[in-house]
Length: 98
Image 1 (cartoon, rainbow, N blue to C red):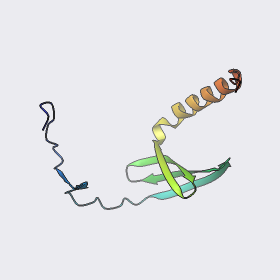
Image 2: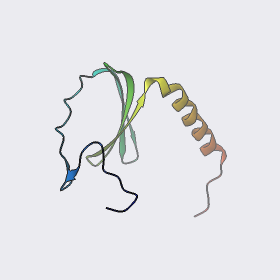
Image 3: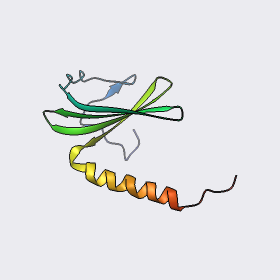
């Protein structure tokens, strides 16, 4: 162990696996789903709710490989403002010549 490493309070890993049993799945209700295709990527936006609250799950599917981002509903207004800022910047900043 390197001098600044500390043992994890969550247990040790043996051969890449955590010694704790997996958590049981949380029941989630789907409130709305929308899908958009952009170039070779498919984005699935799903508004869901579970006992801890509402959230937006954004799934990116590229040739069967999926990645997810989850945004709590409490942050959706701020997230939208940031996306709007990026859309505006993309429209205003000229493309670099190739």
